[in-house]
Image (cartoon, rainbow, N blue to C red; front, side, top):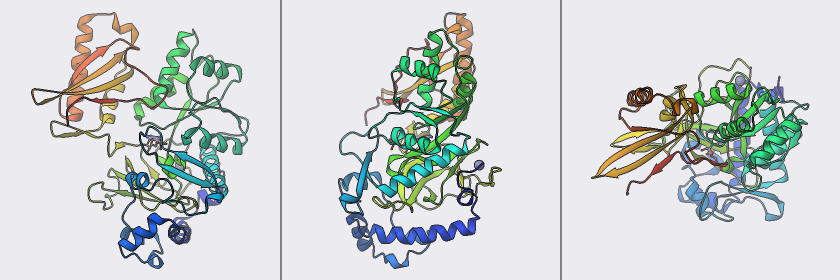
Length: 432
Ligand code: AMP
Ligand code: ZN
């Protein structure tokens, strides 16, 4: 059931003590970085007074911009010769955000991933095909070492090259895969194009979906196509990488490993804690990492806390799936909209295919939203009236969800550009 029973099921009071102890060490360590030395001095913070998670609120949160400005070494707390690896955030242009790891940081992170994989039922007899990009991005190496520690046969195939992916899946009968959700849908189409069935002709039983927001509806769809269980896996390179929070077999929210991180969910505007169950920004303090301590790091990811204890017995709090980013929310004619709201509506329609995108334009000073939606191949060449009705239905469902009516355009399956990396869902062509 558990990789480390004692730590995973630790009573909350004991967990608080453990957090307090690790936090104190972290604060002492953070003073070795020039960024936190300056931050503490500027804000008259007495590090001695930071004894428990509640004391953290006097420290201003750290942002991605701080990390960029602090490039390359302002966040480094150990001598460079202690550092054995670095990673960097994906998709960034310009100065990267770089995180350094000591040998013990890597060892702990590996353990965190192994624990997460064990929680979804992966075991040493699994064959694990890691379809994430290896390199600076943490999804490749991070998951790789965790799977090896678990003892699974780990195939470091990396992202892309779908034909080869399919060949390996078939030949080695891979039972577990790590994959970006949009690529899982694309790969299924390519598998079908080869005359194979993702469920019947393969042995996949566990899928780890990470790196990209996706709705519950998308997960269900992926599970159905592959005949496998798909688990949500959350992480970000600034805070180690994969394994920060992970679903267990109950698939209801992700356990955030609180012996590694102190979790806060804050209102992104006021930075005060959001009421329980309300969406806010995930803010994390690393308490089990030496080379790059981060205190109150604003992830930009939005989620809410689940209240009930999980039936699996793990005591670490659960967060909801990521509801969006503080920065992918877009404002349309004054209305705040998350792409995920649109995705939910689209994916609940069985006629809808696997891809969509939202295009924002401005005409005569008026915002226009177009939602391009791929539909299933069998419908595309079919009855025009039926298509018109489908379009109208989706438009009205979207209206009830987001309170504006976008122009829905039903397009041919495969016509929206896909990618083997993270997909861009919103194309905003409006002038600033
Ligand atoms: P990176 O630092 O390149 O690993 O990107 C991390 C970001 O990817 C996070 O801050 C999230 O915005 C996003 N992300 C990672 N995992 C998930 C997930 N399971 N669901 C939604 N978004 C995710
Ligand atoms: Zn659980």
